[in-house]
Length: 469
Image 1 (spheres, rainbow, N blue to C red):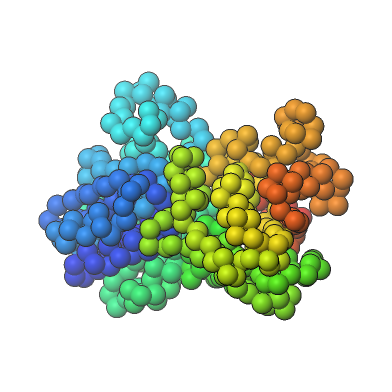
Image 2: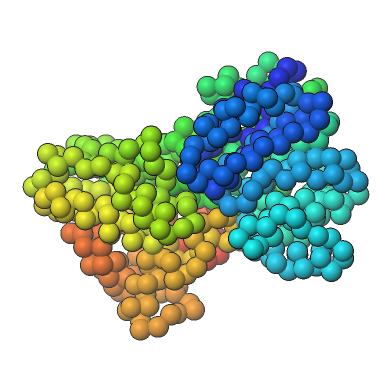
């Protein structure tokens, strides 16, 4: 997932844009960019694989003068893209994933369009979105037509001389919030970006809603849809603890997840801990409900290492997993520990680094408690897992069945023998004393939205429909 931020103000927007964009650094690890409209449209893009956003853009942003700007922390593509179109020059940033990008790019190429930006040999999805938009009668019509053409998701900010056009994905997979500070307006993926900058949250955009921010304020260009399929993983793992989506806070939802895990458990242990950072709130909830004290046998060296889940390279993920968590042997030795984590995706880092660190320092028992059900399907709507073979649950199923299965529905039911075999296979593979996953209905309850208002595709392979949970 990428993070996007935009500002329209009476004065120079550069400082709010710089820090507001930086508050999305937990969402992407590949590229970052800023675009500002002052006397002219100015853009800066840097790779951030090996350095933080602030260090790369600190000198740049001071020279980017203007009262309107957009920024992005990008999971994959170089952004913002700048286009000189029939609508005039504009800059655009996006958050999402387009499954039919290859077909759409071939269609546009056959009509004489060309693409100048490539990422790993693939068309830059933000440039593709921009080219789709300029097919419209105007920018709003172009965005609506783009929404209808793509398969996947796309939220975006489009900056031109008049202001910022803001559009949330038509199914609402990714969030956008609007804030106000005096006569300044801002838009953000993470509502937590507003607090220290002095913005007051005005509204969360509805799925498919399009608004325009300019020096006179907020104008609605297209009302939202009734359909809402916001990504559940925002609360479980991806989102920042201080953020809220659809008025539901991330930290509180994670604490509730932990409480519900503990209610379903009867384990005896010396302490509860969370695998930092996202597992911490789940563990706090588990400790509150169970009465087992919360302690920190592993601490994250936050200044040096980002999340191990987000980089696309397995080598990079492994290095971060190895280096970021530092054990405290005095707390670990001889102890039985309940470890809460947000999810098991591939499981390789958990097995090879986290669990091995604990064992090397004399842990007595490791009871792993996971805040969501086993992940069964790669994400179709954002940059995340891209293949079934990556997923620990699918490796377990293949080992049990002796082949890959097209239909894995019998492994969804927490009470089925197939589900129990799968969990036991993963437990043995990880080498932990016990393993339990959150039930789907409990995860939905912890988030606090109806199942048919959440994207649950990663777990059940379905979306855009009524789900009775």
